[in-house]
Amino acid sequence: MITLSTTDPGFACDFEALVNARREADADVARDVRTIVASVRDEGDAALAAFTAKFDGHDLNETGWRIERADCIAALESLPAELRAALELAHARITAYHQRQRPADSDTTDEAGVRTGARWRAVDAAGIYVPGGRAAYPSSVLMNAIPARVAGVERLVMVTPTPQGEVNPLVLAAAALVEADELWRVGGAQAIAALAYGTDRIRPVDVVTGPGNAWVAEAKRQLYGVVGIDMVAGPSEIVVVADGANDPEWIAADLLSQSEHDPTSQSILFTDDAAFARAVGDAVDLQIGTLSTAKVARAAWDANGTIIVTTTLDEALPLVDRLAPEHLELAVDDPQSLFDRVRHAGSVFLGRHTPEAIGDYVAGPNHVLPTGRRARFSSGLSVLDFMKRTSFLALDAASLGAIGPAAVALAEAEGLPAHARSVAIRTNR
Image (cartoon, rainbow, N blue to C red):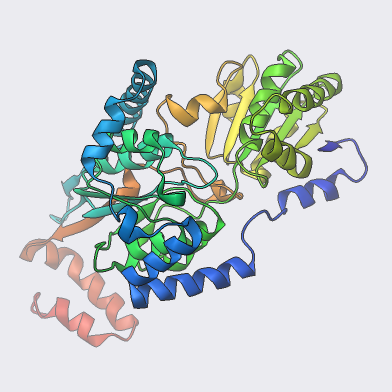
C-alpha cells in the first residue's frame, strides 16, 4: 500500500507517478493478438477450433460450438428461487434505467424553409463478450445485452470462453433472460476477431461490447474500424473520498471490492483524517484474510492500493479529476456539494450508503465504464452504443435560393468548382 500526504514535500511528484502509472497491456500482448486476429481472419473456424483447444482445453467439435437456448432456459429454471429473483430484479432495474436513455428523432423546418433533422436506428447485430476465465459474471451479460435490446438490436450474439468445455450456469440463466439469439463457446481475442470478420459458422456483427482480459481489450483496440466497440477497458479502479465520520470497516470493504477483481486493479482513498486513514488501512489488512479472493486482493492492494491524506476534502477534488476514475464514491453527509464540482468520473456513488458494488448489480446504471483516465473523454456503456444517427435535410427552390449563394461562395473559395456548380445550376446563377 502507498501512503501519501498532500503536505509532504514530494507529494506532487509522487501523485504524478500515480496518475501516470501504466497497468495495461504491453507490446507482447499486442504482438500475440495481431497473430491471433490474422489467423481467424484468414482461417476462420479452423483457427477458432485450434485456439480453443490451446487456451480452453477442449475440442469444439466434441463439446459443441453453440450452447442452445433450451440449455439457457433450463439453467434459469433450475436456479434457487432467491437467486433467480435477484437476477430478475437486476434485469428489471437495468432495463428501466436504459429505457430512459433512448434518444428522440428530430425534424424541424427553420425560417429559411430548410428542413433538417436526425433519425436514430439500432445496429443490425451486436456481439457481447462474456468473461469466463478468472470468474464468470452474469451481471456482465445483463449490463451489455440489455442496452442492446432496448436500442432495438435484432440479432444479439454472445461469446464466452468455456475452460474444459464448462460454462457457468448463471451466465446461461442471464442469457435466457436477455433472450440471446446465439451463444458461442469461444472466447479470447479469437472470439473478438470472429465477431468482427465472421467465419463460416459465426456471422459478423456491427458492434462488439463487453469486458475481458488484456488480450480481449487489445483485440478490440486492433479491430476498431472493422467493427464498432464500446471502449478499450483496462484494470478496474475505485476512488473513495471519505471523511472520518465513516466506519473504516465499510470503506475498507469498498476498496477491496475492486482489489479482488484482478492483481492490477487500483483502489485509492482520499481522506482529511489521518487517524481514519490508518484505521482503514488496518481494516483492509484484516478483511483481506477473510476473503476467498485473498490472493488476488492482496496482490492488487500491495501493488496499487493508495491512501492519500489531504488537509480538506475540497483539496481532493482536483486530484480526483486528474485520476478521472472508473468509480468514484463520495462518502460524506453532503455528497452533492462535492459531486457538483467533479468533472471526470465514469460513475459516481453518492453518500455513505451507496457502495460501488450496488451499482455492479441492481441499481440500474451500467457498470461497463471507462478506465485508465478515459473518463476525461468517454462515458459508460449505454443504449447509444448500439445505435447510429442519420441526419437528413430537405430544401425546395425557395430555401435553396435563400442559402445557396453562400454555399456557392464558400465552394469557390475552397477551389471546388463542381461543388459550386451543383448548387448554382439549380438557382439559375
